[in-house]
Length: 256
Image (cartoon, rainbow, N blue to C red):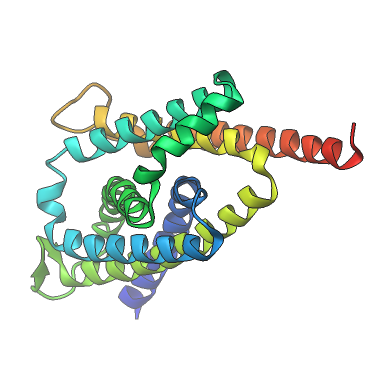
């Protein structure tokens, strides 16, 4: 009974953790699908997350191998930083005519399946992050039996698996909600891309703390100090963008 309660408690902790991780991941995905027609946005999220779920399921069996490849998160970090800087630059420094011309030229790269591929690629980097955190928590549980999956005790693996599934569901609905907000408040897009860039910084921190890179301490990405910094900055960006976009919307509505 004591072991059951311990497992149940860790599962709750993992669900909360996945929910927190899903929040910033969902913002990135919402930004990626926003350019699509509304009837395709939900489909892109569905197919993208379906592929991501398959990847996570397979990755669970290979986590002890994947943790050795810091390049996965490094590429993900560079990709998120690139799209963040690129889009903020175009919004702030390009003239409207240039933006329209650039948009027309880039539409071929922004099709439905290209968007799905981008969503899946971003989630691969996120998946390694969430699984590393899940492993760190799950391995604190007492082992159940002698059966192991992917180098992890079967009981611990089961907790990670169910926590991951619930996290994926939370991410999907959160992403849909963020898409709706971005459609209702277009001026929030700059703040959204700033968050995308900040999540890219988060992946940079994870890369630099990898055992094979060693620039930052291994435990730093999951320390209270970094968690406070990360969520504090993310919240500041979100609130600043929200108040600014609401003010602009009211200004446009009153015709000022």
